[in-house]
Image (cartoon, rainbow, N blue to C red; front, side, top):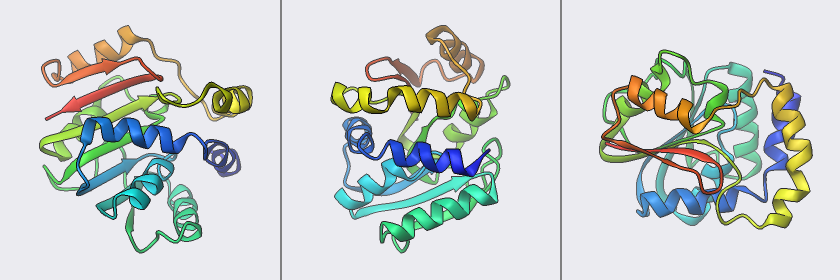
Length: 199
């Protein structure tokens, strides 16, 4: 993954992250707990959560060392590096114990979800009982249209250059069924295409 493009995408979305964080908290609705944010687009939502909810213990994990280094620099720049742990690990074989996190976030997940749905299964594995996972992509349901319009064209171009795969609702439904999580998941289309899993 081209780190220069990745940094530009993450910087471009800085006005969007507060709205995505608010949407996540509509589902989670606790001010404490253990949070895992996954992937190369991690950090933006977690920065907002850390500022608003200092009781959250947040871990960021990505599978490329260069991405982890980039995330570390961004956390240091936000003066939040002491509040967050960073880990380098495969997304389809998470280096965490079972039932460790209360909330798992994976924005930009559709770049990475595999046909064997290992990542979805791994996310479910590391969730605690009653934990929530928020997986997918989109601008968020309450994001002002002006903010979206400001970045939409450039964001689309950059994400395509990073190798974005387009996923349909039917495709996500198929992933859920294949992962054996039909009774634990629902799809939310407001503000993007999100898979919300409750253990």
